[in-house]
Length: 121
View 1 (cartoon, rainbow, N blue to C red):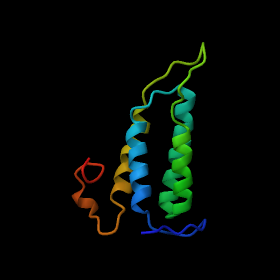
View 2: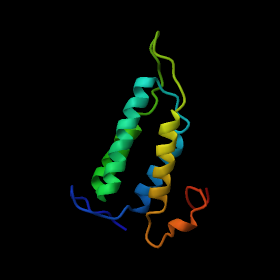
View 3: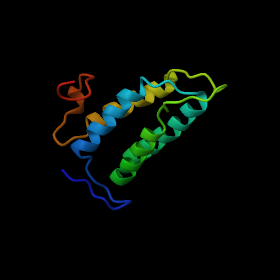
View 4: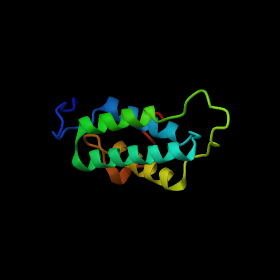
């Protein structure tokens, strides 16, 4: 499947985008970030939720890329804020997004979701 690459146009989430999103969400649950960075993550999750609600695949692709760039950095400044696990609300939102994106493929039956992130995982 190929998504429509024109902004504002509805499309189908292709397998590559679905897998990228699900992998990112799994990684995100392991991130340790400063509280201000978790606020940025929340903003990116809102953009993903909006793109899904609007069925806007290009916006979804962009929001997922933005979320990935919000992730942890390798170096931390001296005196930098402490890093924390994801807030529970963020974990809940990611869980909902995993189910929405994971069950959005052609022929998938959302009622048969077993909580896994896809085949072979």
